Every structure is written in C-alpha cells, then in structure tokens.
Length: 455
Image: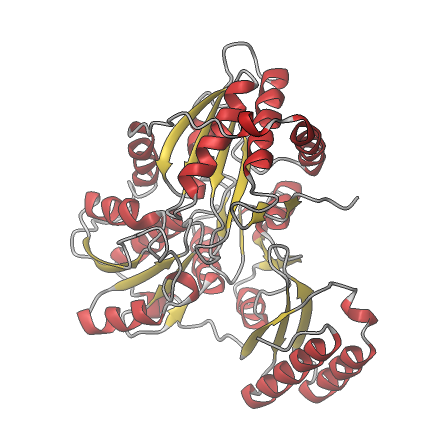
C-alpha cells in the first residue's frame, strides 16, 4: 500500500511544510506516544530523542516532545547525537523507542524524523503503517494552539557519554591507538563533538575538520559525500588514516595514508577477511546491495566468502542478515552493519574497527591491496514523477545496447531514490571510458523522458 509519510528512512521533508509542519510533527509525537502507552509495560514509557546539527532540529524536537507528553509518554533528550547513537542507547536502556531528527546526508534545508524500536531497529512496515494512519487522523483533530506548544526539552549529557563508552568497548582488544594519527571530517554534523572525543579518549592524535556546525553548514561540501578535503589533509599531515562521516554519522568513508579513498565495499572486504580468519564470519557470506561493486564480489570469492545482494537500503540489508544469520553487511555509501555490535550501521563504530585494524600494524593500503574495484559511475537525474523505469522505451533500448557493448563483466542498475525526487543510474564495467559514456547517455534519456535534465 502507498504511504504518504514514511519513506525508506523515516519521514523526510522541508521543516514548516507538510509533512514537517507543526501540526504533523506534533501528531507524530501523539501517535508514537500512544503506541508506547499501548505496547510498553507500565512505567516504561520513556522515548529518547536525538538530533543532528540542523537549525530546524530543536523546534522539531520540541513539537514532537509536546505530542509525546500529550499522549502520556516521557520524552528524554540526548541533544545532538548520531543516529546510531540513539539506536544503541535505546537498546541498552529502558526506552520504549527512539527518535532522531535528521535528514542524514541531505542539505541543511531538509530534515526528517527517524524512529527506532526498543530493539534498536527501524519499526516494521506494519507498525509504520499504523503510526502513519494515526498521525494523519490526529493531525486533523489538532488545534493550532495545541501544535504551538513549545515547552523546553533539556539535554541530558549522560547519554552521549554512555554512547562513547559503548564505542570504546569495541576497541578493548585492539592494539594501542597512541601512535595513530587520524583525520576526522565530521561533516559539521552529529559527529562534530563525539568523533574527536572518542578517538582522543582512546589515545589517538586527532585532526578534526568540518567540526564547527552553525546550523546551516552540515554536509556542505564536506563529509562522506565530499571526502576530497579529508583525503588531501591525510596526505598533507602524513596521517595514518582519514575518516569522513555524513551528517548523522551512520556512514563512514576512509582514506589510506597514501590518499586512496576506501568506501563501504573496502570496509566489507577487510572486515570479512578478518572475521573469516578468526572463524567469526557467520555462514561464510556477507550481505551487500545491487550497488555493491562486482570487484568486491570477485575478491570475496577468491577468499571463499559469498555475497548476497538485496535492494539498496540498510533496512533491506538488515532484513537479509536477520533472515540468513549473516553478521556483516553494508553498502558502498559507507553504511556498514556489524550485527555482533548491533543492528544499526554506525559510522563511528566502523571507524573504531578500521582504526583498530590499522593500529594493529597493517596500513589500510595493505589491508585492501587485493581488492580491485571495477570502474563504476553513479549519476543522479532529477525527476518530477516516478513511473517504472522499464516502461521508458528509449531508456530500455539504451540499457540493452550498453549491456551488449560492456560485455558480461558489467552491471547496470537503475532505481529511484527513496528519499529524494531523483533517479539513480549506476553503470559498472571494465572499461572506464565506456562506463562514463553509457552512464551519461542513460541519464540523459531518463531526463528527457521525465521532464528534468540530468544532475
């Protein structure tokens, strides 16, 4: 069934406009609060709220908290904290649910509401559908005065420290970090304080960049979508490692000491090898997506590790991991799930694991030296509507021509974003020039057919 509010990653929009207008956000609090009252044991109705650094976050959090109070639940504020931080804290404490006010890697003008169950996972589809129906129903009955309630929501500092303690515990068996020099690009987002604090507390020498959020500079030419400044700083500082997070720090992209970027596929490769070597890789396989590079699949096969592909989205990666028993999965974007740590991908947690491997004696270049990724291009095409892409005859014809030209060692994936009005074109093959040619050609065809030109 089509849904009006929830996409693949919660409720997204522009604050002040539906679905992030005051009445709808207040109604979301009422719906979630009533769900908590109905399903949680008496006395366990606390709901943790965190946010990234967008200027719209505090007002959205207050409106949501007002709705929660109206429904008889107790909102608790962790203040600025990462999305996986909220997921981890909800699991570790007696919170019924968690809420993160964030639009992840999107520009500051956007925002969103992400919900987590007590298990630290996104709610199942059926629960989101129930919540959506309740939100829309409550929204119609909420007066303007009720939606303007603006009670203070005071940040409780202990939650950030507890989250950092959880992360530090994952590095206990690692070699000393005291000789590790690391560059952290915090995307002017949720990791701006937490990232440097974490790595300094385990003894690393930290160079933090893009760690001065002003409410508007989150993800602005920095972070995991724009890792070039981080890469350059690693080389200039002769650092051992660089990490770039996104706005809510559930992703991490790395740089080697030589300045080579390592994405989520590289992290999956070195992590799968390490887990297999210690006999801790469940089922001898990992979970990737349709965007996972063919080079990773072949490199894993040489190591005797299988790869299962699912549609793009951490929700689908986690579902397959839980279904099959795999304990490692992720996406090239840098969203990696170590299920032994928890069900949410965590950029800081991934960074601690990679840093531990590097501080253990091998460089990141050495850890990924046998991974040869195929040339891959991804182009976003703004669209005003989203008909099935296979229904566009011109696009279908070009895809068939591209597959013939690129040969068997190639992949073409066309899909719509679940959070933006764009179509994504991914082309992968052995010849970089032909990959670039077909990516541009297919993207242009989609643009011609769907009213807007390619990005």
